[in-house]
Image (cartoon, rainbow, N blue to C red):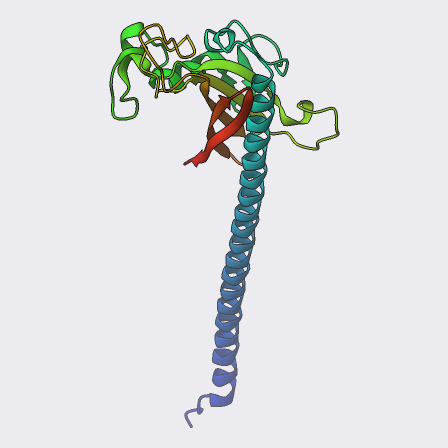
Length: 233
């Protein structure tokens, strides 16, 4: 007699194989879900940190504008500021390389050249060239490094911030004298840019954030005030 196959035993063996496959699939699915959840959480954390650091840098830039404007308003002759011979007390040493909150480095001399003419070095021809961004020719602003340092060192009050701020000052391009290092020469007639200066601040925070604010400071009848303010993106 030919023995009949054990169908019950065969079915049990097959069932154990399917259960193993199902367990592996479940593990893969749970691993994928866990990885996706981790990535979402990490992304949300980065977004929150970037938003926080961006807001901190923005308010730091605004604070630096206010401080620079307050200091400059107290100076009687603005020519020393425009030619770079007069600077803010808020400086952390001579121009050079600084370490930023995100670990990168910033060279103040090179950055000044970049804001002046867009190059690492600037000749007089570069500074006077009329371009789309600098269409005023000889009256183009010649940004002078005015203040730089950590926001925490800006005030005697305790400020818990690692943001690094840099401020520049330049003559307003509305002038018509072609002398960007002189405030409103009126030897040839009235000058609409007399006693009007431009302020520019870069604020560097964590998460590779940077905020740029520009303002126009005007003085009328001995009273200085911010005539315009904008964030540059």
